[in-house]
Every structure is written in C-alpha cells, then in structure tokens.
Amino acid sequence: MNVLTHYETPLLQSPFHARTAAANKMHSWGNWGGYASVLTYEDLAMEHAAIRNTASVYDLCPMVKYRITGPDAAAYLNRLTVRNAAKLSVGSVHYTVWCDDAGKLEDDGTLFRLGAHDYRLCCQERHLPWLLDSAFGFDVAVREETEEVAALSLQGPTSAAALSAAGFDVTALKPFRMADFPFGRGRLMISRTGFTGDLGYELWTTPDLALNLWDHIFAAGELLGIRPIGSDALNLARLETGFVITNYDFTPAQQAVREDRARSPFEMGLDWLIDWDKGQFTGRQALLAEKAKGSKWAFVGVEIDGNISAEGAVLYHDRKTEAGVVTGACWSPTLKKSIALAQVERRFLAKGNLWAEIYALRELHYAKLMQRVRVVDRPFFAPDRRRATPPGRF
Image 1: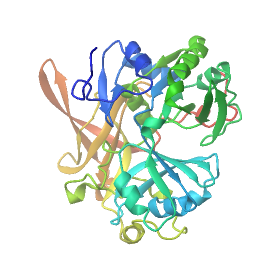
Image 2 (image 1 turned 30 degrees about the horizontal axis):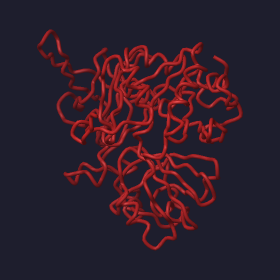
Image 3 (image 1 turned 60 degrees about the horizontal axis):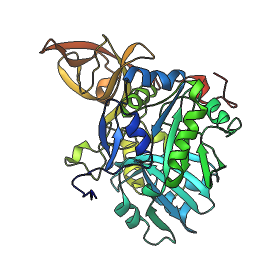
C-alpha cells in the first residue's frame, strides 16, 4: 500500500478534486489557501468566453469560511465589520469589510445570514485569531468551516437555464438572496452571488455530495455550453467588473510589513459600505478622523492606450513624477481595451496627465512603453442580465 505523507501531498485537495484533476488538461495548478486550485483547464480564451456567453463552473472550496452563531452574533458582527449585520435579513447576503483599530483593511468578504443567530462569513485570508479576539464579551461561537462545505460558482448567461434543467427553480431568486433545495441525501443552498459581475449563482452543499453535484450540473448544462474554469479566467472577469482581491489590490493590515502599505476603506473606494449610525465598530474613530482630514490614496479604474497588459506598471504624472501603481490589469476580451485597477495618490487625480510605464517583451528583449492613462468609472462591464429577475433566457 502506498501511504501518502504530508510532503508528498503538500496541498489539500477539494471535494471536487477528482473532477477538476480529470478536466485539467494543462496540469496547471496554483496554491489557494493551502488547496490545489486550477489556474487554466485547457484554454483561457474559451474559459473566459464561457463566463460571458454560456455557463462556467469554478471550484470555490478553498475560499475561507467562518460560521458565527449565538444570541450576540449580529452584535458581534456589527462590532467586527463596517456594515450593519443586524439589518441583513435571513436568507440574504451582503458584501462587507473589516478593519484594525487604525482603520486599515483586514479583509473583505461576503456575509450570509443563514438564521436569526446564524451567519457564514466567506473571505480570502484566514483570520480566526482576530475573529476570536474580537468575540470577547459577546455570547457567540466562531469556528472555521472551510473543510465542511463544498461550493461551486456557476456563472454566465445560461447559468439559470442550467440550474432549471438540473431541477432547481431559481427564476424568483433576486441578487444577494439564497434558497434551499433538496439534493440527494442532503440539501443544496443556492445564492445569487458571484465574482464575475454577470448573471450567476453559488452552490453550497456538503463534501459527501460534491461529486454528485458536479456531475448533475454538468449533465444539465451539456447543451448550454457549460465549461469548468480556472482562476486565470475568473481574474479576467473580475477585472472587467472592477472587483478587488485581498493581497492583489491591497495588503491586509495584519500582513503589511511596511506601515504605509496598508489601506483604509476610503483609500480603496469602499467607504460606501460604512454604516456610521450603527454604533461602535473596530476602526471607527480612525475612519472618522480620515473622513474629516481626507485620504492620501485613491483606488480607481483606468483605461490604458495600446493592447499590452499593464500589470505591475508604475503610474506617473506628466511622465516624470511617480503617482501610483497598477494592482491588476488585462487586455479585456469583452471590451477590447487595456484596462487596469490602480492605487493613485489623490493629489495627482485632479491634475490628470497620467502615464503608465509598461515593459513589453519583444523577442527576448523588453521595450519600455509610456502609455496614456484615463481614469474611468467602475465597473468597466456591467450587463443588465446580472440583476434581471427573473433572469433572461439565453
């Protein structure tokens, strides 16, 4: 018998691994939170096309999930996060962030209200020590449940049709709401949420039902262009809709080695989330002071001349003075434009005249390009179908 040891399998395998590994023709894997996660299955262009034109399936199991229960669950989350968790109705979801005492971002994520005193918080990074310390004085239980949940993201114009063909009627499900369905020997929760800025859903069940769920969804979507996608295609889609990712677009406060690298909700364009009327929350005093004084940084969407991705580019004012940095960029297949997300010093935004310093590989040599930058509104791409209820038939 071949006994596996930790150094032979350094990354965990999700409950869907038997299917994702079989479909991963490129053998392209990355590390997401200690799990082996597919980067590209077969063809990046086709995977992105599935998100925007048919239906795509992405393995969400590595996403960190916390269960928060108890009589003080809402009060605890109101102290922890900037939004009002008590206003979130049962069966609803909202996007939120949380900060340290200095008002700098720890992480962002989605908060699901499963019951009157029962929440699930999903995020990019692990924060259990911070969450437990923040629970002091509250009648609440906090635990990580990442390994107890099998989750898939089903996104794209034909995603609702695929669910209907699978026997799950989601026609009345509004954005940021969820519904529960029987499935096999257990249950399936479907939320109208996602990270593509398109029509889409997330499917939540138990690990023992994972492979059956994968097979069931793919059989139902066979005539609807369903395709598994990896993180590379998802990244293209999230850039097109202007969504941020922790440790890509901002460094979490608890991980920042340099004090000036952490960013606040104001500096990341997330201050619209803050509920100033709900009472005290971690970072409130620092954020009030920043609101009165103003912020050094701004987070913006930009379009860049040319067709070379500007990922990692430095931004300059008038080609001379360093003004910011690109945190994520791509040539958008949907928009046929070079787009990017960037941190820019606010003093340069009003002045305009921004340029990106891009190094393009030309036959083993890098050519330095200075390309004009235009600040534009986010999202770059926002189809009406993402919010239409009932969803359209595609």
